[in-house]
Image 1 (cartoon, helix red, strand yellow):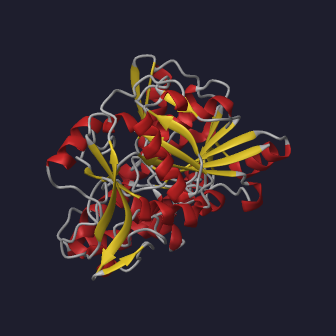
Image 2 (image 1 turned 60 degrees about the vertical axis):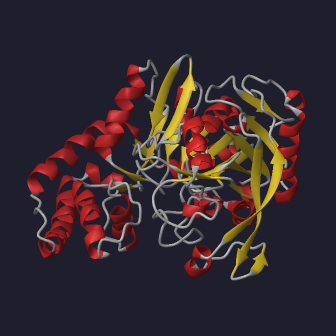
Image 3 (image 1 turned 30 degrees about the vertical axis):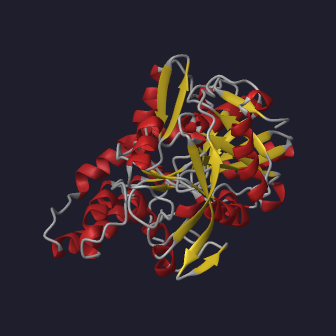
Length: 426
C-alpha cells in the first residue's frame, strides 16, 4: 500500500496535471481532494491536449479508478460537460469515476454571489475566477450547503435551495443585481442529479477498503500551497486547503496512511491574479518567461505574472506540507537565458530574512535577494536522464534541491509525457 499526495508548492499552475497523469500509471486510485472547477490541469499526449477541471488527471489511464473527494465543491453542469468530453476522447468512465456523496454542490446562485462579491469589498479584486467556488464553501461552513446526496432527494433539495435563495436575493437586491428564480435552477439541479446518480457513492468507504487491500492511492491537489486559505497569502487565496493536510480532510484518509508528499514547482515562478509576488519581473525578462512558458491560465486565459524562482517561499511550502519529494517543471523555459536567478532571502526594511513573512505589510515590502547561476544556452527538451542534462543545468537544479533539503524525483522538460526525466525510483 502506498499513499502519495501531489501538491503545488507555489501559487498554482505548476504543472500538476502532467505529473499526476504520469504517476497515475502506477496508481490504483487517483483522487481530487479540494477546490472546484477553478482548477485547470492540462495534459498533453498522443498529439492531443486535454484540460480537466474536476475529474482527476488519472482518468486517461484505463486501469485507474478516479475519485472526486468530499473536499471538492462540484458544479454538476460543468462536471457533466467534462464527463462528455472525456467520453468523446474514447475513455470509459463507468465504474471508474466516483463522486463523494458528501461533496458540496455549486449552484447557479453561488455564481451570482461571486459577481457581487467585489462590490461588497468596495471593488477590491481578490482574483476569483467567478465560478462560485468561494460562496459554495461559505455555505458549507455555514451548514446550509447542498451536498451531492441531496440531488437524490427532490423535497430536501427544493427546501434547501428555497431557504438559501430567499437570503441570496435579499443580498443581490442590495447591489441592484438581477434576482434569481427558483424553479429553473431547481429543475436543472434535479436533471443533473439524475445523470450523475450512477457515480455518487460513499467514497470514504472506498478509500478505506482500498487501504485495507494494499492499493496504491494518489491524492491530487488543485491550486498551490501559497493559495491555502489558512497558510497562504491571505486574503489573496483560494477558499480551500490545497496543502497536504487538506488531503486528509478532503478524502477521509488518515494522516498515518500518508507515505510521501510530492511538491511541484516550476524552474521559475508564476502567479495569476492579484496578491504579493516578491520575485515578480515586470520587465522584458518577465515578458520573455511568459512567452517562452506560454503562461496563460488554462481555466481563465489570463496572462500569468512571471518571475524568478522564490526559494524562501518554497522553503515555507516544504515546511507546512512535509514535502519529501521535489518535482521541477518547465525547465526548458530557461534554456535560452544567459543568467538565471533564484531568490535565497528577503530584505524587509533593511533587514535580511530567510523566513517567509505572513503579515501582508511585510510581504509588500519584500526586496528579493538573489543568487545568480550561469545559464546553459542549449535545449533540454527530450533529454532522457538527469546525468545527460548540461552541467550548468545540474548545478542549478542541485542548488534548488540543496537549499530546500529535498531530493528531486522528477524533472519536466516539456509538456509531453515523453519529455520527463525520472530521477531514481518513485
